[in-house]
Image (cartoon, rainbow, N blue to C red; front, side, top):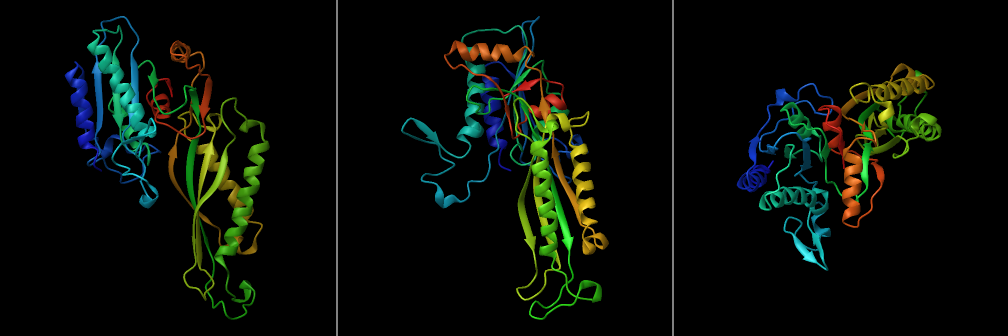
Length: 355
């Protein structure tokens, strides 16, 4: 929550070369109800920025977007230089976020400044938008769309190696809780139906095995094939269970990261059908275990990050491929297995977006 100074700095640079700029802290109400935004999120200290170079008329508008936030620098002791102080060694710049994506931010701001210094006036509007929260929730991009930031095409300069990413997977974060029955681990226990203890960690193993089987099924299913993306993924990422070293664990919590393809998204781009599939799968598996059948697991669903895909025929795609070729960096059409803010501008704002 210390991005205000950077947003003001970028706005001042773009304002100095003729852009109309705005830096604002969105109200939580502007993004309330959007599935990728966690309940209770606010933007204090995390403003968004938009700068607009008004076109001379008759041309198509272009949005350049990037996120200014970065992930944590921990473990700090593994860095050989200060992660928050850029350092050039051997022709490469090192620092937290240099690649993802302060390099992209610098490139798009410098491009806009260069056009202005050369007195090159575009026919369509050029919109520069920098957002927060991409690394954590994606709420900044959603707030920008809610604020009216859109164009006829968008380019997000994430580090793609000049590949033109026209698709990305979405993701869901379910946390599954299994309850057991506490008891002393040092004493033999009768069957649970006779009052014995139940190990919640072992019962979570039933769920884990089932989720692994579903992952293998996804990899074989035709609906999980995509020309530019990998099949959907089901990855356990966090687990917590037990209360004491000599007690049967009374509960166990397991969080998954689920990646899903654009073809599995609903009309709004969200993973509601995937959510239903996972819920029904866990319910079905639980019925095969006598304890879980009577004490079914609960599922808490975290934010839903939307998948997105645009046609390779969208005008922005051949234009960017041609521009890359002009500077000797031949790229190809590809996809990003993870996610980027372009999905939000595509899905929520109607702006076809590429990386």
